[in-house]
Length: 260
Image (cartoon, rainbow, N blue to C red; front, side, top):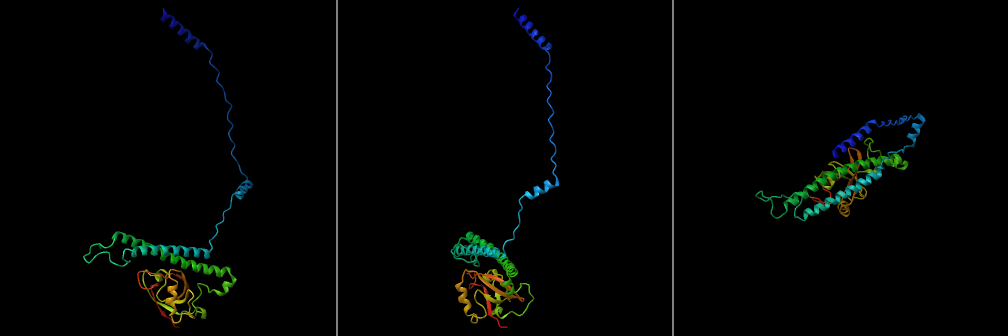
């Protein structure tokens, strides 16, 4: 009896659900579509004018040359530190690392020495490239000063001028007869045959037949010296740093007197 009453109640609920009215669907108003933005020519020009304008400024050639010289000084200092560390092992850049029988030397740390030599060679190559940059930068700064300063323009000879007989103040007094590889003169881009017009404050009026040159170079060890040479009739400015290296002296070049 109980099951029958439960089935009867379930049927009544199902019939009531079938005969109940279905709720009417709700209609949502259509979403308005956004209109595309249209810019007039005036609006576009105003937007472009409101954008920040960035101007590319060229670096000052003189400051650029000074920055390169500062970078060169840092390379010089790093090379000197590595050379000092190499000397602490009791060897230089050229000494053999093997004994008479071809075996690695037992009195030195061969691995450390090879590492130091490799670093020195890499930095010397960087230094040589930096000297080339400095030479180009000095020439550019020279032309810049000549073009922007009326006074300097009347006193500085253009870099690309035709070869002429040098003036009395630009007379060469010495000649580069040889340049040793990996020497300070080599890294300064001095070449055999260059005619030296000036090294620092030394020129044809005060070099005393080159007797003043060794003392002057020794006084300026590890300091940058401006050097001016005549190369194929052209005035070439260079930068030379007298310093100790693997060979004799502080320059690594053979300089002889020059007489016209």
